[in-house]
Length: 466
Image 1 (cartoon, rainbow, N blue to C red):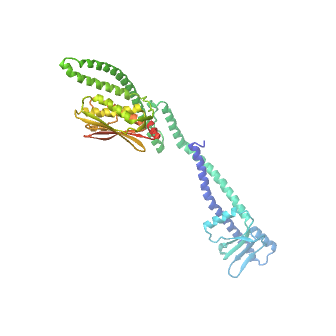
Image 2 (cartoon, rainbow, N blue to C red):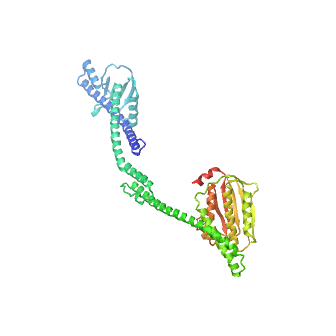
Image 3 (cartoon, rainbow, N blue to C red):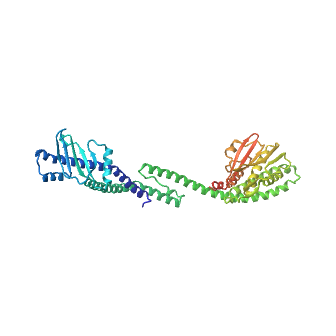
């Protein structure tokens, strides 16, 4: 109850109403004290009229007049000469004097608080203006404890009334909030829970019904999100089914093409000039088809294992990649260079890092060989306090604009004719698995440079997992 929206609203309402009542209580108590003292002055003035009517009154009558006025002494100054007075013995000396002639609001509040907090029986002097122009000044002495008792009783009544008003107000607001806010919000929450059980079911998408503008906006936003999510889930399901079918087809097709590739090796040894002329093109076409199948299968493996981080020597991995690529070059005029410190040790998965570097170097080799011009590929590495940086640079023709726009998108970023564009996507995924980044640093007609950024901190693996 307390942790609910309506419960907290109820508590806050009571607190705020009580605070408001406190702000009302303080000046009202000060006003009550002022009225109390002015009433005593008025009673004392009425009592003094008896002395004016008869200069000689009995001590018993004088005592009764003072007792009714609840004061000890009365001094009424009508002019500078004559004074009328009623008096009786004062039990103790006067300890405070209060002037009720045009007091400030803050003074009244301060005097009222002092009266409430005082627990001693004090005699006070009160000075004021006589009513109805009955003189220049009236002054009385009186006991302060009856005044304090009246103030405490008045304060208790105010607090009881404030508490009653707070409870009634809070209850009404509680019901209003329950009806206008909490129930509609709970309805939205229930709808979200129901939708979560079967997000593919379009019938569970919320229909905005709230009358409150903010809640209706929230329902409409939720409806839009659920509609998009339901559509995305359906599309994802279809793509998953399509991907599974493509993976099966690619697997079987790769086996068929591999067998065809073995037969083409024998065709190349044929003495027929036409066959010898057509065989290389056939071999090239089959090789591209096999590569496409392998890349598709590799991209479709959603169970790519997380990198097993160990200390690996980068120069050794780069050397193995370049040695393999030199075999693929054959007699073509293409040179390789490596600028990697022999002692540089990275924290990485050696197998996955080999695949990344091999992919970049192979792409560079194929781009240069497609131009039928000499070229060079350079693999360079450096490090700083935060990360290792690996650069693969070639002197190829550069990437076309379309390829740059879709560089890391599957089946869209291919450069070679017949390429799938999956190589860079897979390489980028493997680098992100290490918490790093694969970036295109430069590309123009003089060549292309890719940069691999691998952070040295283990915490960098956390964003990659996301």
